[in-house]
Image (cartoon, rainbow, N blue to C red; front, top):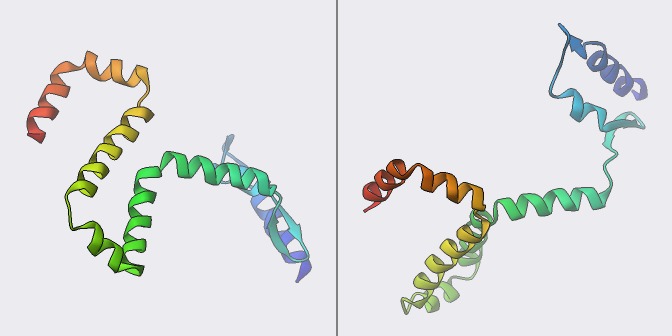
Length: 127
């Protein structure tokens, strides 16, 4: 039914201000528009790509780990060849700490050093 999408938006929009506060999902509903009975996104493809890029940049280490696991499952011969020496494990550990350090903001590092007792307790617990 073509009118169903409009009715759903009207119901969501009617309760927009419940007790004077906006509902958090109303922002997302505002970015949607009815198209021939369905709700389609009006966000341009370039904006979606920027959102995906920001997500990938923020989550680069977990995404890299998942990609490596899938790649290793699909092509196990490369994993066996790479496991013949310790160089890959050393490289991966260095890369993780290097990437993590490059993403660390100066203010966060200063904040951590100001709380030296907590930082020292964390280092002792790791060792």
